[in-house]
Image (cartoon, rainbow, N blue to C red; front, top):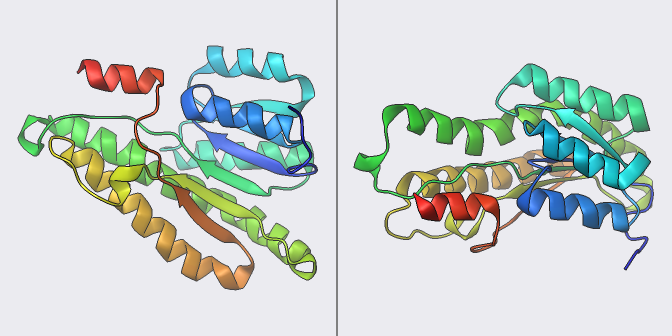
Length: 206
C-alpha cells in the first residue's frame, strides 16, 4: 500500500539490511522516502537496493567507526542533497548475567549498541541541523530516531549488559532531545518488545 507520508524525505537507516531495519527501509520507500541503507552486510544490503531501484543506496558502514559514519552521511547528502531522518537501528543481542559475558563481548556490545549510535548521530547532526533551519518556517523538523527496545525502560533477569546498553540509548535520546530542540531537530526512540528477526533467533539460541 504505497503512500506519500514521507514524500521528499531522505533517511539513513543503520542495520538496514535485515530485521526491523529492512522492514523499515521498505516501508519508508513505500511512503515516498529515499533511503541510505547503512550496514556491514553487503550482500543483503545490495539485494535490498536492487529490489528498490533508485529509491535506496547501500552504504557499507560500521557505525562504530567514525570515518564510516561520516562517509555514509556524505554519500547520502551528495546523492540526494539533504538528510531528514537518521534511524539508529543497528544492534547486537545478548542473553546472560554479568559474570557470563566475556570481557571482549562487553566491549563489542557497548560499541554496537551505544557507541555506534552516538557516533552515527554525531556524524549526521550537521546535515540535520542545516535541514532543521531550512524547515523551521514550515513547522517541520528532521528527526533522530533510536531503537531502544523495552529493555531501555525496564530490566529483566539474565539480559544484564544488553539492558545497560539500551538504558544508555534512552539517556542519549533524552539528552539529545534537550540539546537539539533549539536547532529544530526532533529526537525520539522506539521501544519494541521481542520481534521475530534473525537476531532474535541467534540470541535465543545462545
